[in-house]
Length: 308
Length: 298
Image (cartoon, rainbow over all chains, first blue to last red):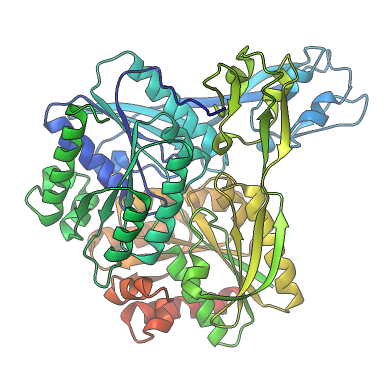
């Protein structure tokens, strides 16, 4: 039976994604947010690249204090534990070890917080404490509400942090007051990318006309297809010398996917990246600035036409 | 035998360019080189080095996934709330179903299911191959199905296979191209390695992500050096960045690679820039960085 994607909220959600790293996902996401916000929309921008969030920097926003995200961490109550080892056997991460008759020992770093140990313990000996896996920041600036999820360094579980960030954004969106939410994802096609895509109405896949850009884009198109998500391509650095634009056009045509914007390589983008001001505002008349403004108006039209 | 990992907090800063150039240079200097691509979501190292003959192909169990028995599921919804990854969702018939892409195979759904309708099964396996590159040395890479990606387990398998094969061949060094970020696959690439080359670019976002990567590298006690790629356009910021790397991170700056059109051309031709155009400014920098790594690590 096919899984249903349900978001339980009315606000349209767009994910900006792209497979390969460094193609310009965050640049597109912040420019879309800034451009749409300038045209009067109430925009939420969610940075779900929990391994390496950068939206705040690209917007020139200081995040201030955040809120820690905790996952379940078991504490075994020695008085209640009978040493049956059920929790040891069930732990998928082998984070608990112990001999029959002993209270198991926990290797905290291995624990994924899944609660399997707590579920199987018949003696209620597995009690709860928390492990901090990251921080979520919320900040309003220049008409944009920015939510940023940041994985704690040395913590390996990006998908859990991505999920916590998505859930936080969704609960905020439920309160209403937004015309649009934009989710900026990690590179790749893994679980931490699937988390935001699952709740999105549309994905914009940012790529570049290099063999690796084309190669990695195919994975994203497969992922979007797998979860039944409409996707469009944004071609960044479209005019790099010797670029494989034709190959990208062919891939897009074969897959029945539209290319909705072409953004030329432009040092103004680099400059706006350095100083933390989106190009649509900092350099609106530059080549890339104009292409980004055109993208903003296309997305605006799609929203108003009820396409998203 | 040494294991050198090329990593970066931010994506797209040039990991594969640095890894491929390092491997080609060390090979040209007579070192016995082996390479491994640990970025299974964007496995671009072999594309850059040019694959050829497959010398080894090993099937690995890539992951475990939950599976719901439709006939037993009563649609109670308990698993939907229990799944830490949100991978259990309601299907159109009201019963539970698994979104394989988000399932990490922990099995909590099965434990909580009162109807015994859920089982965790070995999922589709993936294939890890070792191929001979156009330079003659080998590259281990994963060929996997969608949704079998990004696990530390898988990266560990690639590393193990690379290590075994490299030992058989009497290799001096394994160059590992890591995934972007600081999560599980990166940690699995770094642990137990001999050296990390952290690639960055002179932008505030890349600096922040380098800082995050450096705390992971330090935590696992691996020595590291920094390569500043796309150097030369940010003036004062770059000068300050170099100071900061030395002073605050305590890492050496192995060198800077200037912005160079030849790098883009090499990318388009799917070749390491050091062999596409050895006289390019970027190639000369990459070779001197590689020489420094050879002296200090090998």
